[in-house]
Amino acid sequence: MKRIMWFFALIPVAVTSIVLQFMPDVIPMHHDLAGNTDRWGSKMESFIFPVIIMFITLFWYLLIRVYEKINQFDKVGNKEHYISMILSGELQKYTGTPIMNYYTCKLFSDMGYYEDIYDYVKEKGGPYFEMLTAEIESKTKH
Image (cartoon, rainbow, N blue to C red; front, side):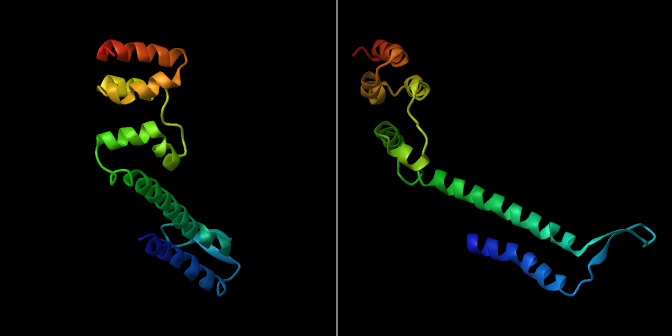
């Protein structure tokens, strides 16, 4: 899919590059309603639209890559597996960003996954995690 996308994006660049060799240096760029040329420009301005097409293709290429990266986690399974991936740091390897912090733990706590994150929070320590540990202990009565 991506190769086809880049192939079709490169066609205007290739055609413009070939046609450019046969064009004069100055070409009409705009005409009024009567058909009179009211702006002249360099033949290099013909590359504007092929370059725009390349940028749009790059945007879609990057969007597809991000979507594919997100969707690879949909293949792994259920909620418990996601939580174990987050707690073990395995998910962080894929995304490259720290995932477990106070707010993530708080979110899991509020969602009802007390048992799953209790050990992780207890191990982390620090003032915020101590508050969260106390909150989790009051909800689960460890």
